[in-house]
Length: 364
Image (cartoon, rainbow, N blue to C red):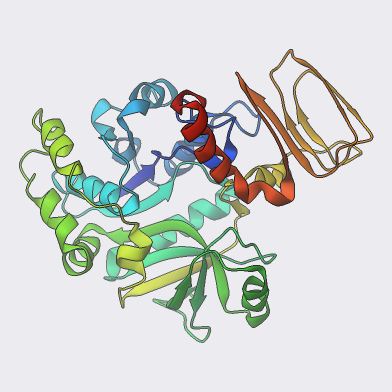
């Protein structure tokens, strides 16, 4: 029997620019079957959390442009469970919006917040961690985040340093947080691994509604005051007009920078459930099956010659010949083609910006 006070907020408003051209502003990566197993990333995420929270307590926060795709891919949820943002304002405003929607229904809610586009290999372990974490925050006024035991010095992830000698509320895997560090340079990432007290920041949070409310009041009062003006309007026909108005003046800020890096009551749950944020082509390459030359290929008519360690994504029936490439990304989608060294994939976001400026929004 699932706990009726347990709620989930799935953040699904991003564009996934680093997965261009497969992911773009029309169809972002959360709505794509990137692993080729018949389920999109948002469907996988929803089904995972449906093992922890009642389905009617799972909310999807996304951009207005993605309402129809969300309805189509998650037909089991009600329209009121799709929270539509008129503009992208980063994670703190989207969490504040969801908090007020949920508070109007259940002020005793205990909430897990997670991105829509992560990969979890060990789902049973993940469900156990989330269930235990929700139990902890329901009994203690802390802000709990999940940290992943690092396996290599990844420069694309944020890091969390923790106090090694602590357990919390009887759970030896929950620690007090010392510092947060955004994506470090390689040498710093190596030193983090060597020190042994750093975790990858998974961007998954748990808290009671009361605790996160107090954190917004203390650290983001301007954002809290904006959304507080709508009390009595949430889950009514007047909500949309109110949200359209306040989002025009709401500032962009992440929950990490706005709250987690400032609060004193932050804990981290150190876990290992085969996690990847699927933020880059390289991370997808690591998960896909490889041929004997370590290439991973999507497309029915792709021929590889003298090529190895490439990730190739082609339209199903396009005939493609690739010769002499090593460690490359080769992706085509509609009228867009990317050929890029895997080692340079952090530049893709800049390529997308340049394309938008030079050729127009329709290509991004």
